[in-house]
View 1 (cartoon, rainbow, N blue to C red):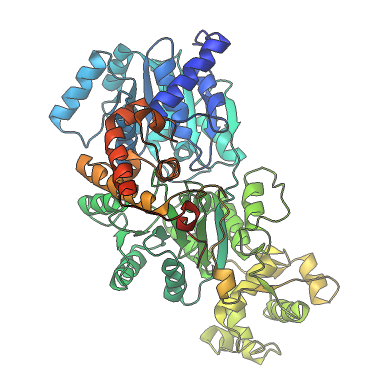
View 2 (cartoon, helix red, strand yellow):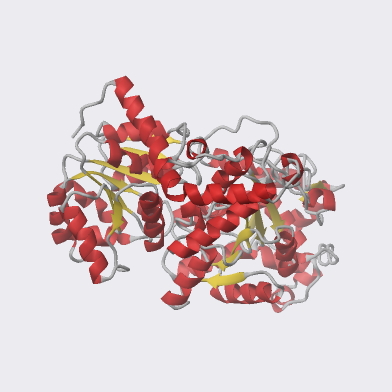
Length: 631
C-alpha cells in the first residue's frame, strides 16, 4: 500500500537529519535517495549498487523515517552478515535485531519482547525462517508486529541466471499471500539485465522500479595472468601488500589448505575457509579475518558473501571462476573504501574443462552454465580494457578511452612480433587433426609430445608436429584462448569440447585477415608499482602516525565489545579524524561517519587518543606521513 508522502521540504530535512544523526554522513551516495523514496512511496524495487555503494542504508533508513512506524523486515542469507549489520546499527543508535539459530533462548526471548513492545525498527531473518519449516506460524507473528516492507538482500541468490542456489529464496514470493499491501525490495551488488528481470519475476514484484548503479570500480586494478608457477605468482602479490588484507580464492578445498599452510609458513597471517571445515572452525577463521587478527583468507567461493571489511587491498583468483558474475562479486570485495586495490586472475584453459566436468557431475551443466563459462573464458583470454569488458557485460557504457587500471591499458601485455605465422601454425594443426580434438591434444601435437592419442591417430606424422616444441604450455594455451576470443576458433559445447575454425579463421589461415596476439611478460618493477586509482584526496593531509594510533584504539574497542573493527569505525572515518584532528565533541560531528550516537559513545575515547598523540610532540608534516604509492 502506498504511504502518504511527506511534504518535500520536511521530507528532505527528515532524511538528512537521519543520515547525519545515525550514520554521520552529510550527503547521500548515488541512487540511495531514489531507493529510499521508492520504499517510502510503497513501490516495489530492484536496486543494484556495486560493493561499497551503500545499499544497506537504502533499506535501513526507511524503517526509521516511515510515517507508519512499522517494522522493516530484512531477509539475509548469512548469520555473520546479520550480526555485523545489527551490531553496526545498534552502535549507531538504531533499534535492530536478528532472529536466527545462533541465538540462545534468553537472547531470543529478549528479541521477541522488544518486537511485542514495538521497540524494534529492523528485524533480520533468513529466508528459511520465513518460508521453511515453521514459516507459517512465524509469518503470523510478523502480522502481529506490523511489517511495513520487506528488503531481500543478496537477491542474486534468487535468480536461475545468478549465483549460489538457495531454494527458500525462490519461495519468497509467498510473502504476498500474507502481506498483500506491503512493498518488497530486492538488493544486490551484481546483476545483468537477465538476472534483474528474473529477480523481479521470482519475487512477483509489482511494477518495480529498477535502480541500477554504475558497475565500474575505477579504484580496482585488474590483471589477468596465465597460471604458471602459482606460488611464485601469489607470493609476488602478497609481498607487495605487507600487513594488508587480502583474499585468495581457490576452486578446491585441497588447494585452499595447501596455500593457507604455505603462506603461514612464509610468515603471512593466513587461514583457510571452505565448506569442509567444521562449522566452529570456519566461523572462527572468518571472525579472525574480520577482526583483523589475520591478513589473508584463502578460501573457496563459500567465503565472502556479505563480507564488510572495507580495507581489503587485493583479491587473487588462483583459478578462473565459473562466470563473470562470480568474478565481479568476488573481486569486488577489494577496495570497498574507495582506495586502490588489486584484482589478480591466474587462469588456465584447463579451468573451464574442470568446471564443465564439475557442473556435469552435479547436474548443473545447462546451456546457461555453458554460456557463462564461455563469457568468462573470453574475458580471461581477451586483449581489451578489463574495465570496459566488465562494464559492457553488465549492459552499461564505458565512456573512457583508457582506464589506467588494468594490464591492457597499462601496456603490460606485449604484442608478439609475427602473430600471423603463429596463428597459422595453430589453425593449421586444428585443421590437420580433423577439427575433432580439444585444446590439450592440439597443444600436444604442436609441442611434439608422443602421447598414446597422438601416436594412435598418427598425428606425430603431421607437418605441424613439434613446430612449437619450446613454447611453454600455459603460453601456448593462452594463444589458443586468444584465437578463440577473437572468433578465429570455435570451441564446441558438450562434455568433450573440440576446436574448429570459423570463416574468419579460414581467412586467417590463408593470410587474408589481420591477427593480433599478445604475451604476458614477467612484470617489471615499474609495472608492479601499484597505481592509486581511488579518490586522490583520500590521504591528503592525513597524519599517518595519528591514523595508526586511532586504528590501534579502534582494534582495542572492537575486541572489548566483541565486534569487528569496521563496526566501530571504517578506515575512511579514521582518515578524516587524522586529517581534521578534532578537539571538541562538536568538531567530532563534522567528521565523516560519526553521528550523534557514536560521538556520545566513543567521542571521549577518540578525543583522548588525539590529545595524547599531539602531546607527544609530533612534528611531522601531514603530507610527509601520507603513504607513498610503492611496490
